[in-house]
Amino acid sequence: MGVSNRILTRKDNFVLIFKLKRTFKSGIKSLWVHRLRSMLTALGIVFGVCSVIAMLAVGEGASRQAQQAIAKLGSTNLIIETVEPPAEQPDSSKSNTMRTYGLTYVDAESIHNTIPDVKVVVPIRQMDSEARSLNRKTSVKIVGTVPWYTEITELRINRGRFLSSIDLNQQQNVCVIDTTVAEELFTFDDPLGSEIKISGSFYRVVGITEATGATEQQSGSEGVPTTGRGKAAAGNVYVPLTTAKVRFSEMTASFSGGSPSMAKVELQRITIKVGATEQVMPMRDSLASLLERLHNNKKDYRIVVPLELLREAARTRRIFSIVLGSIAAISLLVGGIGIMNIMLATVSERTREIGIRRALGARKRDIIIQFLSETLILTLTGGLLGIVLGSIIPFLVERFSRMPTVITGSSLALSFGISAAVGIIFGLYPAWHAANMDPIESLRHE
Image 1 (spheres, rainbow, N blue to C red):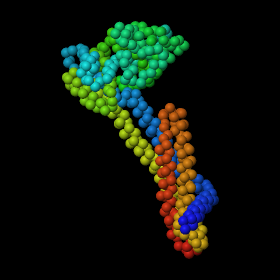
Image 2: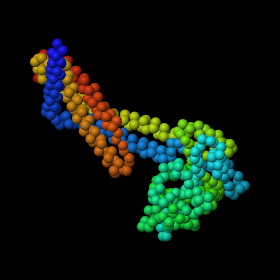
Image 3: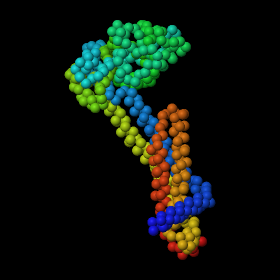
Image 4: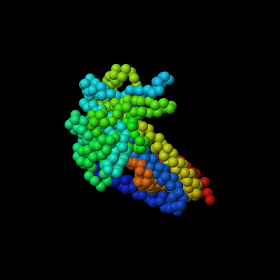
């Protein structure tokens, strides 16, 4: 009894596979008769799937680029930046004013000595200047910092070394330059051991780092006056903090409303590193409390938490993907409406054929499967072509516009799944309409 049941089951499966295969072959033949119409109908799905993949790839690339830039700041770091406080009402009896604000060396020392969970404290001074070597010159960003600066950043040394404790304690005139500055000043020469001139002083190059792009400038302070010549910095030059304190003035002059004003800023930034991400938010509260006491509630600083920025970027990325995907999915909806329209026209054209099939014994289910299979063939073919085209477009965008794009497996699966769903949803009504035609009236149809 059991053997005979297994034989019957295998026979039923074989018959089902044979029927499905015959149905799909019949569907392909029917579509091939009107191949131009079928191709134009499938184009709606092709462009819909293509737009979903391309837009999600562009959004994913932009989001990852932003997240990588934030991640370079360190998920366990907290950054305190100097900001210029709101200007006070000027005294008309004075021709110029002196303003002192921002972070100080006392702030860095107090953070290191007062807060126990702090692992690393890195004070930083930044100035815009011009570096020279023989007859070559370029605008640079001077970064006055300490030897343990590399512990709070992903800075990589290509050649030589970074700043040492001896350089810091003895106020040595040494510097570390990035590859961009090295290419600008030492095109054919070896930078290591050479000297560059900055603001009238010579600095010996002891190391070369990878170019950090605009990382330092992006995370720099806003509204803080710096000395410069108005030209974008080509790269970074790292010098000992003690040397920067002696060689570069903390005073800057500016003109506003026709009257000169002076400002004194000791540090542009202090970066703090903690042991784990769980300590970041409590540390922010401790820093805020300490700095409020040190600055007498003067709002001349701000605390930036990269971990918060990363989480916000992740939320923005999800919203951005949903919006872009929804916009692109509208084109798939339009393509689905076009498919329904064509299939209804096909049903009307093949009314007599439907009547003959019903008269020969075809059931309503057979008619539904026949027309639904034709719709699926159109949408799945369009979906596959859309995936191919959608994978090419992000490559072209990245190649010609230098905009990063990322194609994910989920976007491919999502777009193909939507195209299949569109085929089923928009093909059901035409198939149901064909199956429910009166066989006698269908046979009379001319």
